[in-house]
Image 1 (cartoon, rainbow, N blue to C red):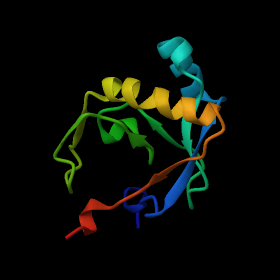
Image 2 (image 1 turned 180 degrees about the vertical axis):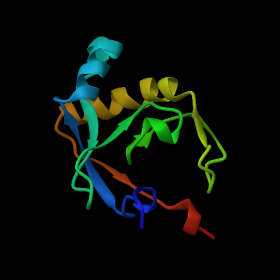
Image 3 (image 1 turned 90 degrees about the vertical axis):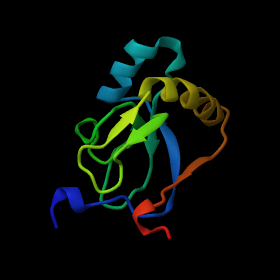
Image 4 (image 1 turned 45 degrees about the vertical axis):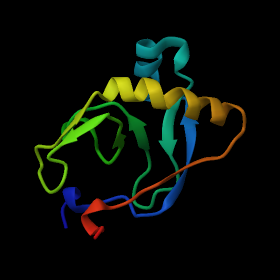
Length: 117
């Protein structure tokens, strides 16, 4: 099994804000006051820092979840593309960050579309 074969297990994970690291610093500069911390998917087996962020191709992620409003060739094609990632992030991030800052528990459930009938 190579690195590309490793997937996040299909479970529900807690999300928290990560306020250190490269993504946090870059996103603080890019998004200003909107940014409260990187969205961090916690306690993922075999992974340490799974984040939810912007990006368009597999080159923009090492296991992280890319947000987008469209996708192309996402099933079994290494040349897939996630579109309108920044727009999706600007829409999705604020309510999640607000919920986390107010003390709410936020979770995400991973689903594998390769195995859906």
